[in-house]
Structure formats: structure tokens, C-alpha cells
Image (cartoon, rainbow, N blue to C red; front, side, top):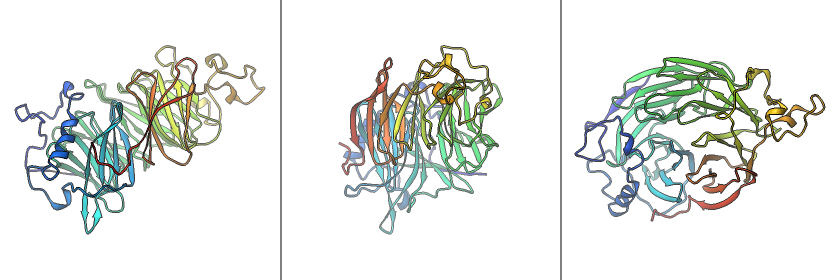
Length: 425
């Protein structure tokens, strides 16, 4: 169970002091918050980020440029920005065009830096969720801090009995993941609305839809290979037995209608209809076991991107919106064999049953981009058509383009190192 505390000032301060203090954030604000004004304010008033005094351990401090250690990377909900959590604070970047929007660096006291282990954005709002991390965490790893960057301070917190594994945000909800439980809170008043028991979840796996009129939440179930899907508008729970191995990664479309999953074997990716639990499509990342790091749908759900420890980013063509679902149980095919039939795979190499292994009949990726093995990469789709954004835990930023017809190797459009010891300009 969590405990809640908030600042004495009204917790949900609006960027406009004359507007209604309404935490149910309006749709038209989500894309129009001027992050450049925040960045400008940081550069012109470096010692006045907060108009009210706050504890010494919570105030941003500004140091000589150094290269921090990355602890976590995450895209915002529309994949237009990303956040980097480091051992001395956090940074927010725009994807296209690439640029640093602002950063906050903390002094943990005793000549130590204040580490942030997780930062979660909410579209382009000034509200972020922070969790302490690293050798010298800025906040206890068992707390979720709600940071208001207009005030330059934390204005509320949620405390738990164990370490926080993940946080997800909607305009109306805060979702917190601990080892074997998920808590759903109202963003308006921090009221606990729902608790969900899960299997051990050290990665903090959880995804939530973003449409204002409905909420779909996906999380691990209570059994190996199972995903639990909560449809809150319909007050319905769906359990999907997605794999016969443990779930390694999954992704939801923004509307919550499609779910993509990968198991710890990492060979097959499966796409499900969340309402019925029906398997719509199965694609093959490769023949060898791999650790899948991330999955991402394009905004139209036409494409699916995946990154793994094999160092190759794959893009798959999805047919979920243009063809009838496969009427077969996903457990009819194990993770070591493909479920696709020869007729459903235009790239099938063999159409003779039993002659060669079934993986030759699998659906393979349309496009690929090869990176260095050994670095953890996170993927998303860019704002420009047929582009992919790749973030590396070594500070690498790639923007690539794929051919939607012929596929093959992606073309690298841009490379940046966002950990360069430079201040935002």
C-alpha cells in the first residue's frame, strides 16, 4: 500500500495563472506546451527555477559540464520527445528536429550527485514523474515524485513499501508498478482507484492507452506467458496466454486496441486484439534466442519496430487492420516454431510442409538497421513518414528511414550523441 503526500500549495498548478486549476488536462494543451520557454527560463534564470524555498536536497544545482551515466531512456506518449534519466538528474529532448529542450541536474549533498532512475513524461506537459536511482539517488527508489517544471520542484509524492519498477502516465491517471503489484491512481487527487496482482515483474512491464474516453491497461498476469488486459470503460478484464515462456516485453497502440508481445526466447512476436484476445498475426525476429529490449507501434498501427541484444532493429509490416484474424489458439505454436501458414507469408521460402523447418514459412521483417551488439536500444517511430528513432544507452541517437515497399537495409538520416558534455543552446 502506498502513502501520499503533497505540497502545501495547490498541487496541480496550471501553466496559465488565470486559468482554471483543473488537473484533467485539456486536449489542446498537450501538443502546445512551450518547452522552449522552460528551456529559455533555465538559461536566463539559472538560480531562480523555483519561486518558493524548497529543501536543499530537492533544488536543481548547476555544475561544470560532465558526461553523466545513463540510467533509463523513455519516449513520451506520441514518440515526439524522449527523456533521459541519469546519475545526476534528467534531460528532455525533441526528436525531430533533434535538440535538447532542457535539463535538470541535482546535487545530492556530500559531493554526490542526485540520481534519477526513471523519468516519465506526459506528452509535452510540464508535469513529470520521477523515481530516484543510481548510486546516490535523489529520491528514495520507493517513491514516485511528481515534478512540476514550471515551479522547478516536486509538488507531490507517492510512497511504497518496496522499490518502484515503473511508472506510466495518462492525463487522468498515474500508474505505478512495484515487483508484484500495480497501483492505479487518480491524477486529480492521488486517490487509489485499483490494485492489480501480477507475477514477479522486475522490469516494471506495464502499458496504458491514451484516448480520453477509454482506458486500456496491459500488464503481466499471474501465470508465465500471460498478459492481463483491463478495459476500464467496459469494466472487463481479458487474460491472453501470449507465449509459453515468460513475457519479456510488450506494447500497446495509443487506442489500446492492439497488443504486441515478445517472450524471453525473443524469436517470435505476436499481435493480439485486446478486446477478444484473438491472435491477429505472428512474425519472426530471428531463429536464435534473443533478449527483446523494446517494441513500438507506428501511429497508424501499420508497422511494428523491435530492438534486441542482437544489435539489429527490425520493422515489420502489420496486417491487423486489413485482414481477418487467424482463428487459431496462440498456444498451438510454441516459441520455437512459427504459427504463420505459407499462404499468409509472401516472404515464405518453402511451401512444402514437412520438408524444412517451419521457420522458413515465417513472416520476416521488412526492413532492418544494424547496430553494435551489447548496447541496449529503445525504438520508436519518427514524426516523418517511414522513419524510425533509435536511442542507445551509450548516448546514441539515430534517425533512420525505411522503404515501405522494397524494405531491406534502412537509410541512416541522422546520428547524434546526446550525452556530449554541452549545455542546452
